[in-house]
Image 1 (spheres, one colour):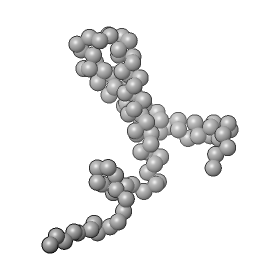
Image 2 (cartoon, rainbow, N blue to C red):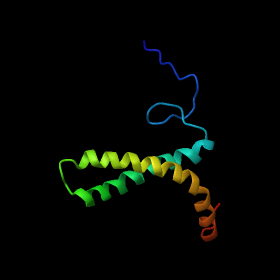
Image 3 (tube, rainbow, N blue to C red):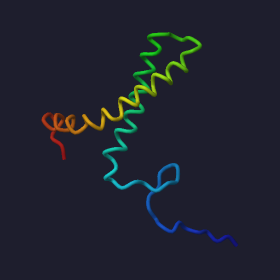
Image 4 (cartoon, helix red, strand yellow):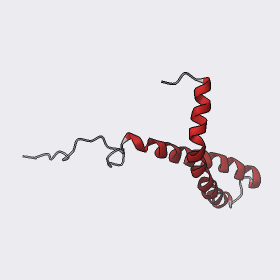
Length: 94
């Protein structure tokens, strides 16, 4: 007979099994992931445009991505409140 143990807390979990963060952290988590994705795409396109499909592409891209992300994340944290205000002038937000 197998006894299943339930987790001591029934909090929702992420796909990695860790507990989800409270909603107040969304103001940092969203720009974190957005900056990773955007800097990845933009640095990839820029690197490819500069060096093409060379053997060093991945190495150059990763270096450019790291530098881009270091700039993108704090920039997003600073400008996101302004962008929300500007958006509110054009969109009826809830």
